Image (cartoon, rainbow, N blue to C red; front, side, top):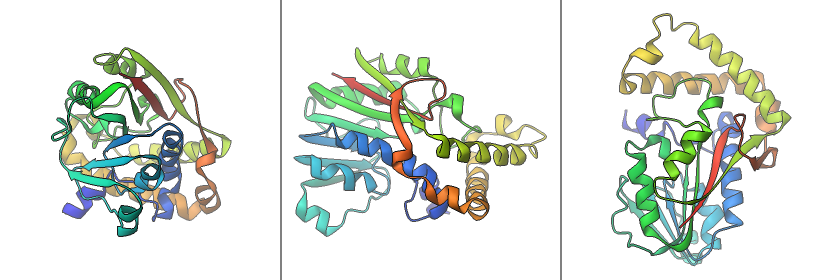
Length: 259
């Protein structure tokens, strides 16, 4: 059971059925790699594929996750990498004004106290340091995700960042026609599954009860989409996504906030 819980919200590059969501996450790392330097802290390093994109751009790379993150000996030899296993917030053992860039992708939606989370990131950043953060746009979510404490509208995203930051730039992760073709196929498939929820359990049951059923159905759905739309699923690359002005139609928010 623990392995299921651990992997439920950790996108894998090794599962072909997850390629579309993996590439969607990868574009954020590719864009962040153009920006980061100095001491970089990643909050929520997951399976560690972000380390492959960002560690070489950093003088020191610190990764935090509540589960283990794979860091190969080769990566350690080539880069100054430190891993800390912890739940956040707070960012224990990270000193005030010590970090040049904080990267946190697809994490804040899992945090109970999101205001404290943003406050802690602000605390550890140097003056002029930047937070780069992504999270799903609730307006484009296909169902309620019980693994998420909450999701945000564009307005709500800005409001939570404003609790600590003043200099805020919110952009969006946009998919091209290929991505949106997959989105629409996925949407129809999810709608078929949700029709069975005649008692509206999605809204009425506690999140913890729904997490494992959701995870099983989500994986089943992705594998079904892979079986029947293999060329479409396999064909999506990170270059099929772009970072553009935020809108109601963006899939994720791509936020840059400066201390």
